[in-house]
Length: 577
Image (cartoon, rainbow, N blue to C red):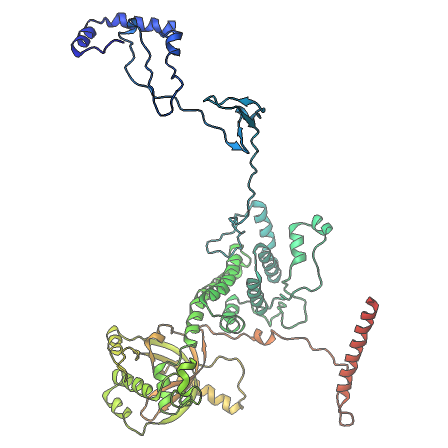
């Protein structure tokens, strides 16, 4: 093997090269093929190792005539990678054939000369079936950003015919309600919410009993619209004699806004649990979704403004219902409760010092005994010292303070004055008799005016008494009364809120809430429809009424009916044997 040239000889050799001759030689050499002989190329193969721990590097000898321009550099090339061993299965080697063709069982010698192994067929992997856990559920139509799919030209033409202004309003609205139910995935809760809303508006949404499912022939021979009409459960009975359903007469007024007001302010608080804000949002979202559907499909263009006003009431109801829920569990507040305890109100009998239950073991029993007389005195008089005048505080400290007037009133909130940050800090710094600070809460002011009342039931008054009550309400007019209330409660109050309260007045001029009978939304409305919700058409009674001569005739009639039912059941039971 020749040694590599030094720098001087290499530079001299390069300067003596004729580049034109070299280029022609390279081109001619490329045409004639490889410049190495077969023996030279075979000599490049690595020899089989005789020892495992000793590594031999073989370098092929190159003839002297190969030196020059195309002589390869002196590099120790790495060994080729060993063949990948087959995956063993039950002691046999598995050989996979190329292009997916199954390999036959053959004896293959190991590369190191070991014993031959049997090549077996590799089993095919089974495809995993989807478990469905990651599959997204179908949209219900009540998602936050849900939008109805685009309307095709055929559907648009169909809706133009269904909701044309020449059709009666009752027919258009009935079609709208039925198509809305068919296009929304209503669960049991949402369906109940929608049904109660429709029934308040005069829609017959009673369930159809004993109808069963659709048979195969009906499904195959009917269109989608015909199937939806068969399965429909909401109707506007224009020809019905039942007074509880809309019949298109002059006695009914189409008013989407009033129905929504009556539904959220009167029906919802009495029919549905409002324990969480999510429950309130669910109820509101269903009604809002239906009103959006009415607007989107132009069901009744003549009532567009009224429908939009009803949709605005949905936004207001979502906020006010949750605020009322918070106030219902916290009113009348510590200040008013303290005044009631000290001066003979409702809470005097259930205060910590006067309660007959709990006693000394109340802490062990986990009973919340409320406010003691000592705490009540500190809360009430501290509130007067901060919020009242010096003269009023002096009068409060006297021993002859007592209640002079008790009235049951209906009020509407017209103004709210929250406590300042400075006063909140001052209240928080006051300590109780145990040296604990922060138990007295800052007071604000709530201003109210007289309200006519919720209007659930007509008061049993004479004509003179009714006229006097009406005159008193007119005389009060916009006159406002102010009451002290904790700032943490005022954050939930809102202008327009209506309350039914028992107000007591002390001889020093202070008024306080003693009993909260009801809290209502700013849009509180009681519809005449409420009286017809459970209405049933009267039917003639065929049973004879009781008389003086025979006072037990009605009881005998009931007994006869029960005996007939018992005999009928007995016959059916014997027939099954």
